[in-house]
Amino acid sequence: VLVAALSPIEYWGNTLLWVNFLGFLILTMIAAPLLVLGAPLTLAFRASGPGGRRRLRWLYRRSPFSLLTHPIFTWLFFAVLTYAWQFTALTELAANNAYLRDVQLLTLLFASVLFWISALQVDPVRWRLGYPLRFLYV
Image (cartoon, rainbow, N blue to C red; front, side, top):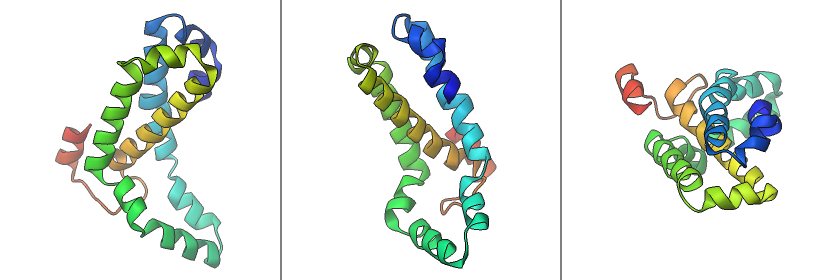
């Protein structure tokens, strides 16, 4: 995440389009899967006490979380957000506005983490995909 957000890639990404795409690929195809492979939900369950586990379970079973981790939603969300940030006028706006660039990086990271949660299924997820479907999903 730091390589994409705080390195010369971030600086030159505002000037050179190919460097911008390189930062995008690092963030979405390397950083996000590595974050998901760290199994953050499992870690939170194991590190929490009984009260914390109860709250996590309650949050995990709610419909907003269920929608956010549904494979169709995550695939479409990632595709639409990627298109919006990379192939519209938002690309130029983000290149000229540091605050908007930070919003761009955060939303792309969020969408790609949701995408990879469905693809890798390291943590327990409600919507399980078989291996052939995961292959098609990615």
